Amino acid sequence: MFKRNLLVLLVACAALAGLAPAANAGIKVYEDGNKFIEIGGRMQIQYLYLDPRGEDSEDTIFFRRLRPYISGSVTKDWNGKIQFDFGKSLDDNELAVKDAYMQYTGFKNHKIFIGNSKTVFSREFLTSSKRQQTVERWFVGQHNFGSPDRMLGFRIDGNSDNKKFEYKLNVGGQNFDPDNRRMDFDTPVNDLGDWTQGWVGAGRVTFYPREAIKRDQGDFKRGSFNYAVEAAAFYWTNNDNRIPYTDVDENGNKVCINEKKCDLDTATGWELSGGIRGRGLSVDLEYNQVAGEMLARNFIDDGGNLTPLDSGMYVNGETTIKKWQLEGGYMLANLPIEFVYKRDSMDTDGYERKWYANDFGINYFFNQHKAKAQFLYRIESNVNGVDGADRNQFVMQWQFVF
Image (cartoon, rainbow, N blue to C red; front, side):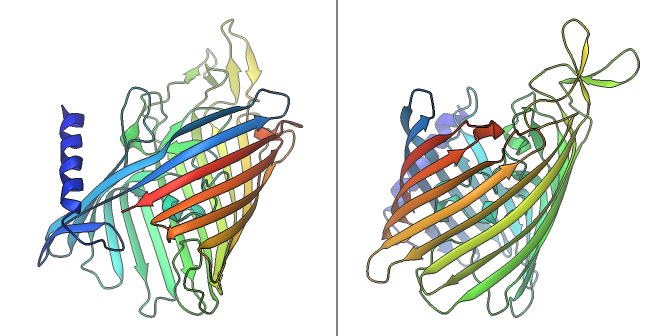
């Protein structure tokens, strides 16, 4: 019943969209003083071709993201936003909740978020998926590889009067999806039932030497060069309320009961990043490092035997994930075309070899990021840290934002 009513609401909002002029962010279908209703969304259709070395190639076409949203207010200085993703459903769920928060804007130079919003770690993650140069975030900013995802809690964004200094802080609930091949965080709003529950706190600072610039990738204005320098850190801890894959042996030691899935105890991360925009050039550089420890250091099999927890990313139940990324694009002056290159890599304690890749892409813009087509070829080496496990990917993505 809920899903059917939601669909009716979205269809009604889409019909109202035809009655209102387009805005930079969504479409305001009603506005009267402090009261307003705004709708919007993004559609990203991807064609993906995978060619692993020594294995059969495969291809598929799918909705990478299908995200409608509605925001609005009836009270001065307060507004709210709800966003769903029909492109990223989990198990038998037909949708996933993304942004879902209340926001207070009554303080000068500050915004307060209450609800489900982005954890303030990783410049790449804080750059919207609809304003990315290379289709996917991959290592840096990816919640599968140690970067926190959205959290359910409180967040504050602030800046100085001249907007050259900015800070963000958040604290809230965030869960861990056990899988020893990854360090995968996600919001508790989309809980699958076997996720380890926990809390996350994060903070970041940004300095703009000349003037503030957005994290959006791609330089459409072609003005003078501007810069951003950022640093961030986070801490995640298990709250001991749900640890489905950890038991206690006869000696009182914590042990993992699943060879491929173990519960995380703590994770800490730090980041240094920056960006340059100007003269058609858009470059981002980021390095972040995340250290994690499992609750257990050993795995217990069906026969009761104990073996060291060396699996996937982890050695003796611990890992340090080291990731960096250099991403840049150049926008042609007379044509709506951008040429893009990215180099990124990731290494962990459990990898044989460093996993790295080179991306080569072309973006064609019909209306800047609102309507564009992206073409990307990715060359990967040592996938999942396995020596010689190489593969190539070709990705086409069509995007429409309203």
